[in-house]
Length: 558
Image (cartoon, rainbow, N blue to C red; front, side, top):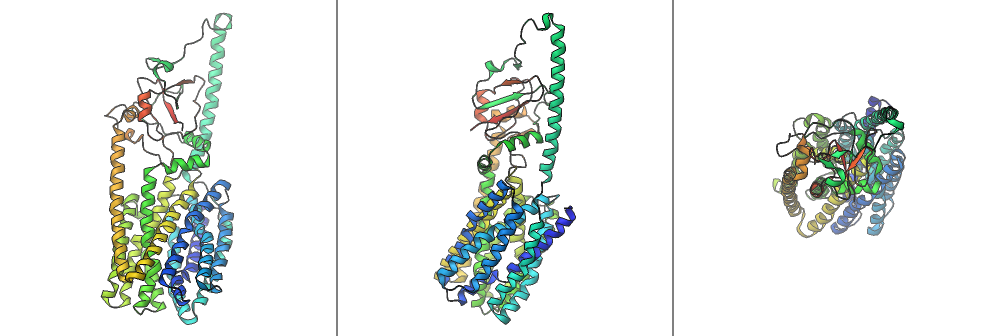
């Protein structure tokens, strides 16, 4: 499928899917309230609905990556999600609602995970995702007012049936959408083929050279075997002795002092050699990943409070379903440009800065909701909804791109699942449960004020965490291992990145538990000095000019 056709298909999918959700999901808690459930029971259902997203998103996304069945899983869970959501019309009682909501969320949470992973895999540039995802905001906001009018006229049951009808076209579109290779993967594949061709030529040249040398010696053999190639001033065995680190040196000329060799083909071979669990362990060993997940949880917490209890607060203030629908429309007026111009926004604001902005703006937004009763009219909620672009749209779009950048080869859908499980499952789940408990005891106004303070405090923690990671990278840049990679304290800025993870998740050129063969016939094996090994953290490409005569690949074995 051509890129422009896929982009069109993705826009259609997001438009109809989010319009279908807008038909009823914002009114879930109002519906439960009408059916006689208490605030505490609503809080438990809302929390359980989000928490089941954690295992569900991870399980379905991991299965899709391992089985390469992204399209089939997307279509299957979409059908099950639509059917189980419609079933809420016929159940009653706390136990019945709780059981069906959990079942529905188990098949609903992976829907956006699968679609986002498929779309990201087909985007020519990371910023293109926002232009496609923006149509989901258009469907959500454009249909919300009509959905509110339908519910006001015919009741909640009409909203459930409308949702099922609008979502139906997405099933057919899902079966056409294929998981594609990213540009980085395509480049790595091309480099891998080119590298294999070079290795074959080098082996042929080495064989020819060996045959010629053998024929020129008396008796067809050398008087003595050639001594092993020395690592700098001495042999590898005498200068190196660290177990678990293999330095494989090639006959290829060494890179300039302080240069880190970036071999996409080697990275692709190393990634392919790892098991799924090995890739996952490598991913979750990064402090940057855990900081990102903490920020995602804070955003989800803020969104969970807003989505679960804003309409209940508005209802207590006398708002109609029409006003609730209009509030969602205003949401999307702000959300659409934030998604659509994401690529342009990222030219001026870094991805990490955009995530920080999203977190702190959630705190401001919740504080404004706490002030609504003091402002008097429920219609004052409409200007506050304009913050949706800086909170949800900016944070979700940046998080989706960040997940792609952090993911190893073969874990694209899995990392999207971890991100969305943390955001929706843990963050929104905790927000829904805590919000319900606080609202039942203290009322909506105090609940929103307390939660605004919690998000603000969490943002300060993320600032301190990010500062510690930066300090750690600076200290690592001054270690002996970093000086090995860069040729000393005065190395270039490009060499200073030697110890940092490369885009795509794998650090350096190899991965834990694997090893790469050298290029050419004159292969020699050596060992890094023990002092260098002890300082290596993660996976880095290093070069010791005095001890190793050529470039080397460092493989840290568990």
